[in-house]
Image 1 (cartoon, rainbow, N blue to C red):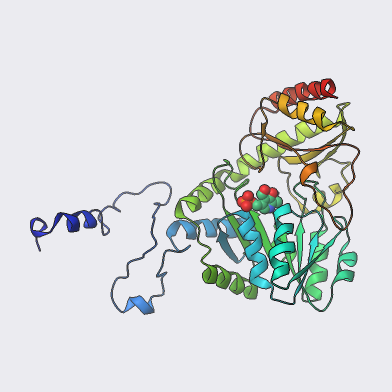
Image 2 (cartoon, rainbow, N blue to C red):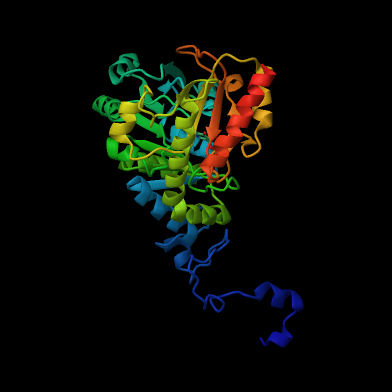
Length: 391
Ligand SMILES: Cc1ncc(COP(=O)(O)O)c(C=O)c1O
């Protein structure tokens, strides 16, 4: 049928179809958007070795997975729509009703809420162990039904470190799986899978995407059975990532090391300065030699991210608000890992059940962005002056 003989609706539907427009080659892989994948012939509909549906199966997904496998040095990676969906997906992929889960008391709040709410309703019990518990102490809590030990090191509010290699070795010896929320180290500074961990989880939303404009998550494993369980979970639940978001993740991966090194160096400079300020009681940053987790960080990690905590000397909430409200370069907002500096008051969201959280004063969390660290220090000094006035 000639083009002229077709109705205009048919002509418009066919505009741009086929391979004709794929003639140019760009630096980054082409961003395809598609739910439907066209098969070359009828026989391929049910016999194709290639993907037959666009869910997590486009070129950009494949490239991102390839990059994350290299980053985490893992055999298998699945993508999720957010860091939290990666956490919950990793857990759901491997537990069943009647199982028991052990989780670190300092775990990310929404992870705890999922365990205590949704998982509990599904008949999976979660018990929490102190953030500084040793491998032996954790294993002494494990029983016949313990399926998974969930770790986060350092904790993203209070920055306690766990001895992940020892915990993974002890758990593996008992046939118990381990999962680590590895968002802080971003796979670059720590690779849990290489230390025997079953599931390494990242909120790619943070450092990998790096610009506070995308939600994305990943789970990496080198255990073939866990890899199959993860792949089945994604397939069975349709946890599909949009190609646009995958593209942003891939773009972020390319500059991750440069950005993270900068975040880390600036973060340490600001943290060291804070230790010298009279209003500060202590700085919780595993790369500081006095930090309780420093020896583990030094042994296992190859760098530090730009997220850490500051315990102020005793101060009223109004003074803390005066401090935060005085900051000009630090935005007040949740999340972290983006190019911009952020600050939050943590106390209202800290939840502990194994060991109550106690500190000499209010806890502030800082995300050190890519600004000049001297400017950030000046901004914090002005904030601390306002804290004194507000006290
Ligand atoms: C340690 C940690 N894990 C997971 C998440 C969840 O990531 P997302 O916001 O992409 O769901 C966060 C978010 O703040 C986090 O801090």
